[in-house]
Length: 196
Image (cartoon, rainbow, N blue to C red):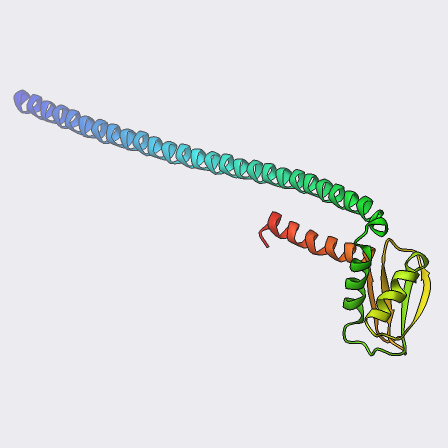
């Protein structure tokens, strides 16, 4: 009986050891699974943080590129605007001398033809600078145009023509042409700068 009892104890002890080993293996496997999961989760979090940092860095880089391009464009506009203003300032200085140029009568005649185009030849009013009165009368006679010549402008040259009833006004002074040219060139300049 003692032997049976010892065998029973031995069997219980072996069974307990087997059970303890199974529990330890399960616990080790569970711990390993937890560690593996934590590592994967850590890598996923690390990757997510890394991706987030990359996106933030890319966004900042793009922002800096945009700001730099914008600053460069603004600087280019300022330079082109200064060149534009300088060119027209020089043109205005040269146009101050236009009346003294021997070709001014032909220039005035060309301006008059453009201004008179499409208007009746009688009853029109031609507004000029008093310094152009002689060249204007000669030009109108050469074009067979009857008009009231009114010397009421101060201009570098050219004329303003109005219809008899005043409903049509055509300004073809040097200043008005220069201003129209300025606007046209400014549109072209901005079109080139901005791809329009």
